[in-house]
Length: 158
Image (cartoon, rainbow, N blue to C red):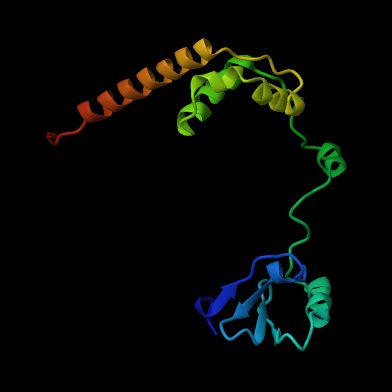
């Protein structure tokens, strides 16, 4: 049985929490463990108890994708204290606004600034003119890089 024969099951309301850990065959009678490849019955009359038990003891299953904050902070190689760099953040904000094709006025929107302030207490609101000037600076830098890349090529362009 190949993975092409399997369907990826997504979690939906009322279904078991085991399905993200298994592939379901196309005829939906068998479930294959994503980690060790063991195959179990998956008919609706069989329930999911055996799948839960296997998921709890599977030796190939990774621990947890998420770590607690205590584990992160207590590591000896934890990163240095984070410092907020206003210039980097405004440049990144300009890049985000360009990529999402939002108006520059988004930077001054009260709801947007409240959201950012909740996630980064050191945030200082950025004006639309600052965002625009950063965007134009980034545009000019990319344009010059593109011109220099084309200048170094030996072929011709129309």
